[in-house]
Length: 588
View 1 (cartoon, rainbow, N blue to C red):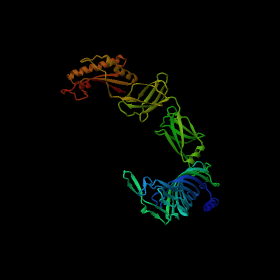
View 2: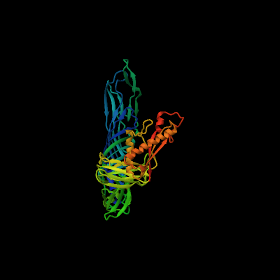
View 3: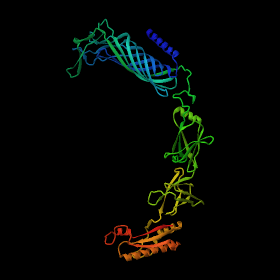
């Protein structure tokens, strides 16, 4: 133990000298780590009937680190015990059973102290460390005497023996990995594993027995009743008179605590934020600012929102428009107190601000500044699209009129190059929507926000179609009795649709054309279709439409839509396709 204390004193003085003389940074420090663990030994001493149990390991480490490299000292006190595995069940001496035994199993203590280099890996926060330690030193190994002998029948027979150890200054190597998590700057908890090897541990020699180790082999057999038996072969006793200089190795697991002692010196701090961290803030760099536009009520993101960063004097620093995800990123923004503003379809969003302190945190952490601006208007946004009927082609320059049918008022706008238009709608009202453009005609359509929930949706998508002039449009319900041209009641809604269309578009003329199938003579079909077209025109005139705006045209069978011409056999449903009434708008 005197040698141990001398070694501890030398290690302490050595480490203290480095603490005193080395230029200190907060990466250089001294640490003390007591631990407790469990050791699993392996003895290479050729004792086939003796095993060695694991046992307690109490240890202590003292380390000094210069950044990632260090020097450390370890002390270990390990205790384990031999276990005789000699088979004593159904044991005989060849004639008589051996039933009583005397067994001695003395514990073994191993004391190790060593010094060696360390390598350490630290997380960026310095909270978590991984250490690889190597130690070279001396150990003392004592105990382990194991003696099994028979008691009855008399006389006593030695069966299994090992003299044990009383070795000192045994050269030893130890390799260790330790993981430490620091709960604060000076205290942490650790866990790890080690491998230790003692080279050439000399056994004792027992003078009374005149051996270092020995045993009488056992021969397995069977009794007359079929029961297994073990017979001691005294004629083939195995003894070793020369003590073995055999290695002893072990592995162990441990846990403990770590105390870190920093000798703090004045260090340079970051000139931007005034804190000590690495890497330093960039004094001249700008920060990234990410702005997300959202609806206040539904939380949905808002694309195509105009966003500006302005200083406290109202000067615009940077501007941009949110993408399809409602996000816009401003790069390299200079440090200042700023206001974040936004507009969506000429409606201002709720503003937010950015302080200089946020820029300091951004430069320190290397992250961008995240901001959210919210659209708080209670009205719906009508996102419309005007297309040519039965197509997806948008029409530019259509004059869109929005008339509030419950409250007096009208709004106008023009569709853009994609045919899109925007209106703001009250939460509960009904609107009439109409689109006009030269060369097109449209009828009025109705739109209501009754039943829509502003807390669930901000946008109302709406598609309105207009038809080009000169396009023939079929009226599905204009049906005549066979050989007749009287207007039937079922045809009136379709003709009323044409009346409304002409009232909404006072500059257009309409051609009413009637068509027959190929059955019957050409002359008959021509005369019949002309009478039917005239009946349609007469009905429109009866509703107040000027005769000058109406054209009646009987096409007979001259404009068939399929193959069913004269002499071609067709089904009735194929002929039905050709019997139709159409109207065609003539725009002025």
